[in-house]
Length: 127
Image (cartoon, rainbow, N blue to C red):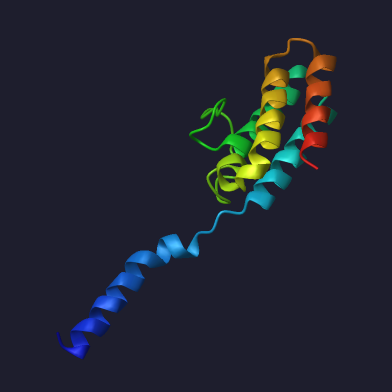
């Protein structure tokens, strides 16, 4: 094989790999964004507002393939990775799963105070 052919092959490989190499998941940013939205949920003055922001937090935590992901709700972490749970170190995942479960409980709540408490607990768990 000629040197020129090797160089062309390497260049093509770099071009094909560049989009995936340029993308790096940022679990810390996803967690911070989930925490922010849990905090916004805790401060919301109506149940719909609490649930909306908790959906955003869950979407950040679990990613589009995770339990509780809601395609009808915004995912403020979509540009940061595939979800904080799948993007995190395996040792951190149980705590993140617990936070997501707490947030899902808040989403399911029918009482504003219960939902706000779940939001506060979610935010605290993500610190």
